[in-house]
Amino acid sequence: MTIHKGSCHCGAVTFEVKAPADIKVSRCNCSICSASGYVHLIVDKEYFTLLTGEDDITTYSFNTHTAKHTFCKHCGIKSFYTPRSHPEGISVNLNSVDPSTIDSIEYGTFDGKNWEKNVEELKKFLS
Image (cartoon, rainbow, N blue to C red; front, side, top):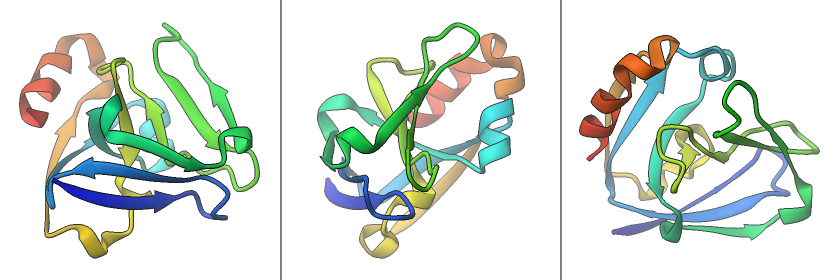
């Protein structure tokens, strides 16, 4: 396991995430992920540490309100959030992670437009 560092665009929100150097991520086509260009690196909550910016985060939820989308109040970047597919985990946006600690990336896709029908496939890919 490797400690990867990341942040929002303005640097107010910083974090560390413990994950392999060879990571698996998923691109989702749901309304919010496709609009924001989010690339999911999903980890257990104990592998995520918010370093700075707790007071700089605002939260948005919709539909089932299971997912908690967190954004920097200053620059608007969603660096991480609690995903509906893994409410016990954290999804980190690969685009917010310093690439210097990543050796390789395996990309998968998730049909989030048809979430209920496809969520088990996502879980299998990420495991």
